[in-house]
Length: 225
Image: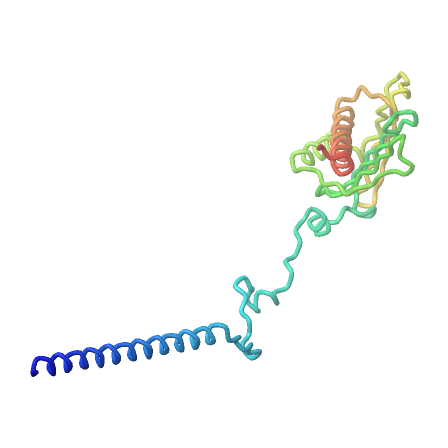
């Protein structure tokens, strides 16, 4: 009899234990579901934008740098403006070549004592002559001025024209204006060594400048592909 009661007691305790365990598990599952729902709501809840917080760009430049003035250009045109070509009243030395039926029908070069001046040339297929600033290199200027001095041009009365006429080769003209004095000499061929040297110097100056001019125009208008 006692064994039967004891067995019933144990069975009741087992049922109570199972019931308590099931209830605890149910509460835990409910708590987990509630926590998961709260977490989901927290993640999906939109964040309100705060207009008072400025947006900082990573690549933004400092304000002081953005207000800096633009850098001055130092290209060739600006440099040439710093040393303008010699005007007519400052030019001392003049050279002119002309031949109407040549492709380059006219070349006129003038410059001052420092080598600053301008060059004018006329091409057969150009409607108007081209005039550009000119600066002689120190070595060229030294040779040119030395040749003018060797000719003693202002004080000389020599006619540089050769005894025969070679006007088919073109006409050259030297002119010097200095200290209120002026002298010019025109010839188409000469056997004077210094006059020939001076004409050759100016011819090279003109040919080099025109060659550079042609190359520059070709590069600007017909670039290589």
